[in-house]
Amino acid sequence: MAKISSPLALLFIILSSITINHFHVVSSKTWCIATLTATNAQLQANINFGCSQGVDCRPIRPGGSCFIPNTLVNHASFVMNSYYQSHGRTNQACSFKNTGTFAATDPSFGRCVYAS
Image 1 (cartoon, helix red, strand yellow):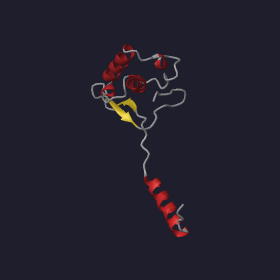
Image 2 (image 1 turned 30 degrees about the horizontal axis):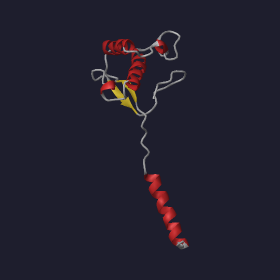
Image 3 (image 1 turned 135 degrees about the horizontal axis):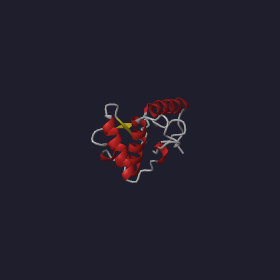
């Protein structure tokens, strides 16, 4: 077995540490949420579409874990993300006629948990 000198070993450890700390870990988790420019009519259409395509919409109904805040943008975001996650996580599954966008940060809050 070859011996490595102490200074060389120390240099190797330092350089390895620097290199590892500069690698950015890219999360493979993404969420689909409504854009802030989507109209109320578009948001409602997205809710209607998602709920008609098998998304479990009970969480956005009164008493559901995602009902509060009771806003179209929050309800639509939950439904859009559920559709996106259950339909292959593709760009197309988050399009919603250009009213969907991607979030790299989990939009879950309180009891409302967004699928990932």
